[in-house]
Length: 205
Image (tube, rainbow, N blue to C red):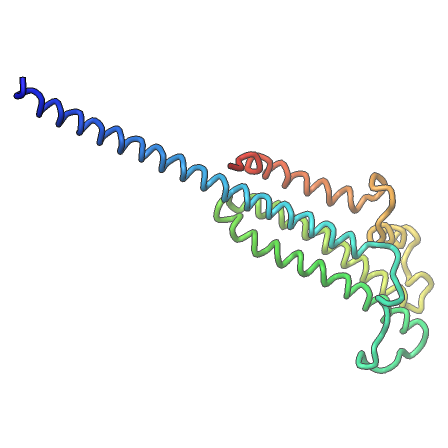
């Protein structure tokens, strides 16, 4: 009887070792999946937050009321304005430049995150996010048109009433979001990004 005890014991020990190794491998694999899921969740959450911050930065530029403090010209900002038209132009330019600092910060944060996005999810999502920059460009161009109109000697800056109306709709946000074409278009592009990130936001551990 004792002859069989040792071989059986060895078999049991070997099986236990195999089972233990298998459990360890499964556990390690599960841990890796959880870790990867957590990393993707955190990246998706951060990216979406920065997309929203970019949207709000653009909206802050478009806020229709400009306080006097935003337009104050300091003595070290060049010679005094030549006339009222020049003063108005420089005051508005300063106000919009100060507001645009927030847009630059939001865009820089997005660009840093997009490096990680491309590593994990490829260039397609990166391009969808960068598509938002076209709204930045449209807004900036409208502001430049508005400032040029102020300085022009021609009536309405030589522009049509329809052109001026479109410029104002771009640079000024509206209380009713449904009537705000600029914001509606921007939000539509953001929704495409939300759809891409939705699966990753469900993988939190």
